[in-house]
Image (cartoon, rainbow, N blue to C red; front, side):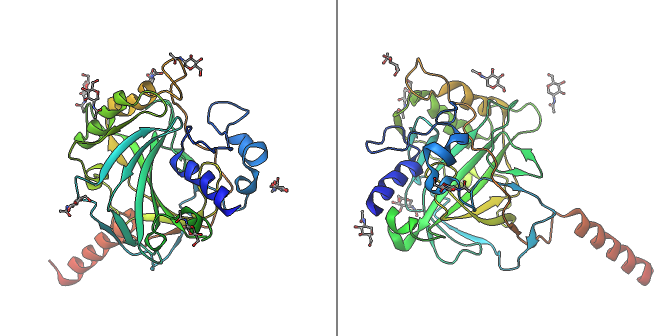
Length: 313
Ligand SMILES: *[C@@H]1O[C@H](CO)[C@@H](O)[C@H](O)[C@H]1NC(C)=O
Ligand SMILES: *[C@@H]1O[C@H](CO)[C@@H](O)[C@H](O)[C@H]1NC(C)=O
Ligand SMILES: *[C@@H]1O[C@H](CO)[C@@H](O)[C@H](O)[C@H]1NC(C)=O
Ligand SMILES: *[C@@H]1O[C@H](CO)[C@@H](O)[C@H](O)[C@H]1NC(C)=O
Ligand SMILES: *[C@@H]1O[C@H](CO)[C@@H](O)[C@H](O)[C@H]1NC(C)=O
Ligand SMILES: *[C@@H]1O[C@H](CO)[C@@H](O)[C@H](O)[C@H]1NC(C)=O
Ligand SMILES: *[C@@H]1O[C@H](CO)[C@@H](O)[C@H](O)[C@H]1NC(C)=O
């Protein structure tokens, strides 16, 4: 049973449509296998649970937690960290090597296994999984991490309610008329033409690091809640981190995702709207942000004004 579950979730983690023992046939595009059917016919064991992801984050209800400190991203500056990019038939996934993450209020060190993306239908039709105060972003990146002590053993990770740590980054359209930007995302998207069919993969030979991809994000500012995998089998074993700042990517790069990769071979439909519907709210914690908040800024300015008034400067 445990082994079977392990196999199923290896498939779920990988989002693979080519998994030999993938008895959970799930999809995004068809009512019979899509998100609405996951909790009933497709994968009821966990998908109908009570701490399911993704969720809407209501920023006013999020409570500040001073234990949510900075993360330590180890080797995220290494340009050999991204190894292979794969079209799984449900997402585009990039395998990672020798990267870890700790701190950030996590109980232990986690190994970064892969990242994958969720999107809608180009910049005009948003497809992030999480939403913030009801706002959905064009795309969302998920970095999937497993407790390092489990050494990649999925069975062990699935038996632990915090066995996995997912890092979610929103992707927003870059301001102005820039194209092919940032260079890191343009390079990443250039590989899509090599993996147009499900099961295709390509080696990443370009020198791009995770830090290059996470450009412009203040990684000290994030939300935290306990949730699940957002794909079957929806196991409730994920510590979620959703970063507040989006990564800004030019429109043309965003629009390559909805127009290049297919869910099967070249005659199948394009991969679009690859996100799960929102699940019931969870209790969300937030970092204590000392900068970037207009209230803090305003009170700081008032304090300075008061000092000026007092000292007569
Ligand atoms: C979840 O699925 C199980 C098994 O199919 C079922 O027994 C249970 O009633 C479902 N729970 C909810 C909340 O739908
Ligand atoms: C970068 O990662 C590669 C592959 O894991 C490793 O061989 C190399 O030593 C790392 N480079 C640095 C500067 O840490
Ligand atoms: C991709 O999305 C863009 C913007 O939403 C849209 O204009 C374009 O037609 C889409 N591409 C395809 C092939 O549907
Ligand atoms: C994972 O760990 C379990 C429990 O210790 C063990 O039975 C199993 O053989 C391990 N699986 C792999 C692939 O190492
Ligand atoms: C973007 O391009 C349009 C049309 O060429 C131009 O009117 C506008 O000023 C440009 N905006 C920026 C921010 O460069
Ligand atoms: C991607 O495809 C292009 C054009 O077909 C080819 O030149 C290039 O070698 C391929 N790259 C990889 C990494 O497979
Ligand atoms: C593409 O996939 C369809 C459906 O699976 C199949 O019928 C067709 O033969 C495939 N075409 C090619 C060129 O492989």
